[in-house]
Length: 240
Image (cartoon, rainbow, N blue to C red; front, side, top):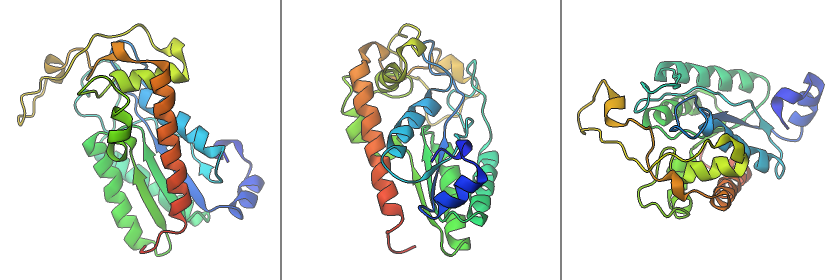
């Protein structure tokens, strides 16, 4: 059930069928010179739409903003703080809980470490405060690294590279504006630098030129299948 499309009567009726809701997280951030700013959002949304056709759950509208650090200074990136993301996540889950939802899957198309830690931190608090809640936090770039990047020819693929370009091609080829060149960030780790664009001018991590629509379709299905598995498990996992 697409949450924003249903009436309050439909919500109440569907609640008798499922008490599971999925909150998707995306970003508005640069994805090179060739991909749209909402690449994270549309990629995870596509997988969720596939899963929604196969299983009963409420699919909430995506949260379009996230915590972006490495590319926070690049043109087009509009970011929020980890504090804002924690508060937003807490408010959404708590209020959905008061409406009768009990199983919560927090799915992020953005895999940034601070972004994911903010969501997980809130989940740890809520699992202890709300006695009968079930929570899962999922990013494909944490749980499906082998499966997804195994599709790639690029050895060290990442942000706006072969994989993400392939997924956008599969969703809507017209959104891909040419192909940026192969590039990798050159941050002088462990130092934290202020001018991140200086060390990562094109905002690409990988080789978009090796992307294909077929790889993208396979990647999205891998993610959708994992989401379906988590939906099946979230109502029966012991130890909450």
